[in-house]
Image 1 (cartoon, rainbow, N blue to C red):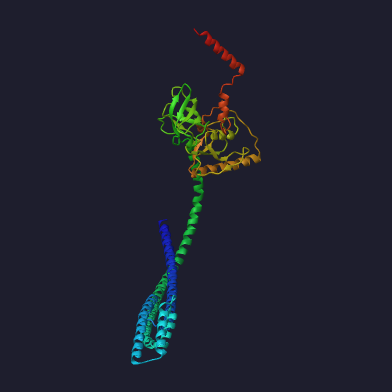
Image 2 (cartoon, rainbow, N blue to C red):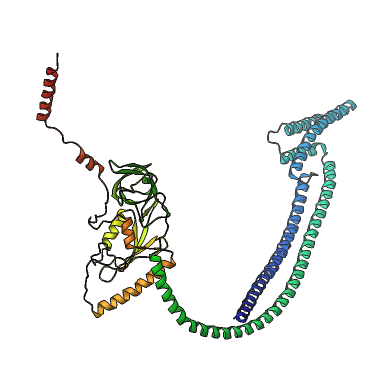
Length: 525
């Protein structure tokens, strides 16, 4: 068996290594082709960017050449060009003022030399008008300024020298822009070449690793085939062992189940107290308990009282029972319904317990098999359900015997107890005979099979067993008292009206008033 275990362990390790290497191969291949695709995309993107940059550079050079040829500025940026134009216009104003002064001086010198005729005065007036119209124009722009300059050229012929000076500056700026654009294109091309080289190197590296992994996968495949053959042999041997042990295990399981059922029915299971007694009045047979409305308690719930020093609850010797009459926010009032022993009265600090209710959550039960409450030989599960619900509990699952109802609900881990009635512990007080037929015998056999399955499932779910006799003792059941139905609610206003004194008639009121007056007159000195 140890050799088989080691071989099985080796097989599991081989399979795990194979699966791991397969996943590594798939992930490596994915990242290999993903990296290659990203690199190709990057190369294409960089190439497109370089082409776009080259086109934009050409367009910029062309536009710049046209603008500068048209405007005649030295600067290349928009703000700088705008500032230069403004400064140039200001300088033009100053030069125009100098031109007017120069024209006046030239005309004065010509007149002093003896020049005559209206042409000089016309030239002076034209120059003045052109200068004044240029300086005082409200919406001055480059085109209007150029128009005024053309007028001055027609009169003074001073524009040619200025254009020659600006032509040299524009040529130098254009050469500088072409040099910058060429440098940027070279940088982009170098980056694309480097990315392509890195991509080819990475592809070659991943291809080598892929070949190594393929060789390992081939070796693992061979080992896996050998392991499969060994597994088939071991599976055959294991099947034979299971078939041999199956019968023995089934027999032993049935014996253990029967023994465990008998032991668990006699076992005292410890539970938590639901509250404590805080006040006792033997005269009115009332007690106060620290159970509140917020915990889910309600009137008419029946509780069991245990001694404060009990080793655990529930025990076999409760002190008695109480019935809650009033449920408040800080405490509740209960009526002493039953006392087991007069020498063991209820005291402050005694434990209050309900097998069907717990604070903030009702206790849930499962009823399995026949439930004979009054030991008359008949099923009384409906009476037990009413007592459980009256004490705040819930019957979550019910498996009645044939002809007493159908299976309802479902076993689950939220159920706290499963209740059974063992006729050996609580035999009926009288014999009840039912006619036996083939149908009833078959139904009884089917029910017993289902009963055993539900007891087994309850144990697997951790549901604790409780005998019917113990549950009835905790519920305060008395065979001489009939079982009451479930209290749906209490009409406090109706109870108050029933307990209030009857209203007096007018005749009774007049008679009492006369008697009171007579007594008052008789006592007057």
